[in-house]
Length: 416
Image (cartoon, rainbow, N blue to C red; front, side, top):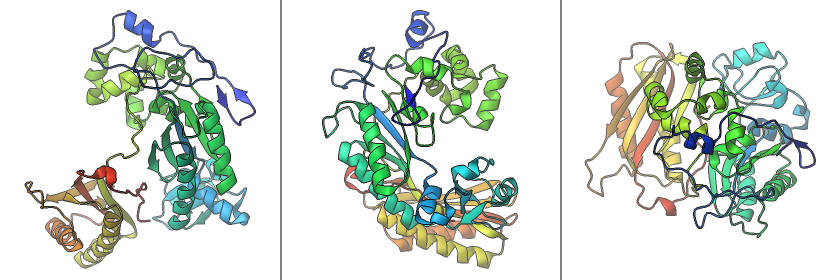
């Protein structure tokens, strides 16, 4: 059941030649851990409590054109007009686009000059991360009103496990409706939601009826729903993977489900197991309220190419200051610093340095050490073969000893 609003239902035809159980009976399945066969027969239930090995009730909430929508909310003159958040200059990049802009083909990560060419009336506004983070905090409070099991993916989207919700509502569909209503009332922003029995399906469902829509995929419907999707809708399948799959005769989830695991491993390596499960609507990942951070960092795209050692060192100091503030805010400590640069031909180069081996006390815990290693990495890379358009720093190989107790910044913001 997919609805554009709470009042109107849109039910697409979920028909396919093959399902999970028929595939298993055909003897084509590898020995992979699968979900329990327990399936709810209640049409109003999207999952079942996991105690005893059953399914869960998962909601994926994704705000609609979040950055651009915040700008339109706060500046009424922008409402109903094509808006892009980002720099309008020659090196600018679109960080977010309103739905009015998307009608012209404007999208995130697009060069601003391309966006302006596609939409001559496009209005560029500078980012206001403080405003976005404040709205995100309000949205997070709505989530936590219903469940403590919230896994934020960014400022504007999160997974929620509502198998046992705080208010005792019981229906994930109803909870998702209430969450969307509460977000709209408190922030004047719209959210789309996907409801299902695992994270993969919930995320796909949240995109099904954007903007301001909702889609529910119930137990027993997952494989059929996935089968009719274009392969590009699968998370992790980019343009190159899509092109390769089409050459192999794979254009939909149904096509993918017909390929055995040996074929997938031969053609897609370690990606194969994920594809095998996803084609059958299977996802074993839990919602992780305290997901372990792997790195903390940031990068900066320049308005003009940089090449001289002096200007690169000056820029590095600025990035050190900003990234170290993020490291302090996230209370992270790690052993590896990585310098990344992107040349004018868009090729990347990275250089890393680690401290260690592992005495427990040996961590990068102060700015002076982080800055010293960062400077050494740049000095070793100079002189560069050509000018660069981007530079970034990352701290990784983090200490997770007390990760569950450490607050974390749930946004990885670029240095625009």
